[in-house]
Length: 212
Length: 212
DNA sequence: CGATGTGAATAATTTCACAGCG
DNA sequence: CGCTGTGAAATTATTCACATCG
Image (cartoon, rainbow over all chains, first blue to last red):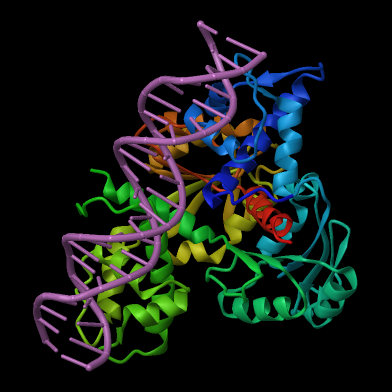
């Protein structure tokens, strides 16, 4: 791999580019198909300069007057984003959000497969969601270790998040996507990404009150 | 209001601070209760310098040797973030994600109330979720206008997102939280926030492949 | 003192602008 | 030509460091 260091802001946009390029691939099965930084920018609502600067980090091999070979660019982005592999994922928390995530089609298409779901509520244990049985949390370390699973999605309440994150890292998890409304900490070497749905709404209301 | 211009990165963190302060408020009902930038920083996994710089934008009125009056700080943040008001929200898309969002407790607590849910699937129209009947999409403009609703949450598939966003802005929506895996555009004066669950996972896999 | 508030320094990100290639 | 690739400039964000206040 060894890709130098790509800024986080760029990584985030690379995933957008990849998704929009997918449409291109689907539309024309024909051989050579090129896209310019300007076109990709207008599709993603970003400037051509931003697109070129971002792609610069991954050595996209664009051609003057033509742009980027879409198929080749996708392969390059997949390698950078780790989408050329399949990833087993455990989901912790079988509430409404956990359920939505377990049924979310987008994950599997990108190579992320939820292989186990855990909760501490005996009421929920044993239910079958999208082909996966909800398992009791006490079994999680065993499943992670025997399956050599490195990615976890956390969809548990505020108070339970940090404790679960600790349990996950102890069991060998290396990357956590946390949906609890509290940012969780992890030892270095473990990557945590916090997504807070309420925060996102608050951004909107701040915009509305700062207008006028 | 008129708060000067607060950087987007700071706004995002202000919402975190607010959430963590909530715990403080709940724990001690006693009168004066102060928190320092250092304490707040260690709770949120940020540096004291970042906390002070962020709060600087909202004139928090901290006291040397003591820190910030928690109750007063909450009120200040609420005003900046628009949490001292109640916001009516429409939800578009009654799939699994839409369902999780409609049952999500966090929104209502912050003053965001989902008052209507829309879908174009006749199969789903009429169902009752958390006290709200799923309505047909054809009625959305009327509901938005008569309710003077300004915030919408979009949880529809890729292909439907931009069209729906256009319909929403035409009906008077001023802020959109978009969960579709495509960023949508809107005229200036309308604020769009894109949240892509797949993107978040891709950040994790990039981290895992860039290690080693 | 030990905390805030805040200029100033540093770092990161975005944007510009243009040489050079096919 | 019209595009990429890429230094350099501009902007934005973070961190430092310290005067100041209760």
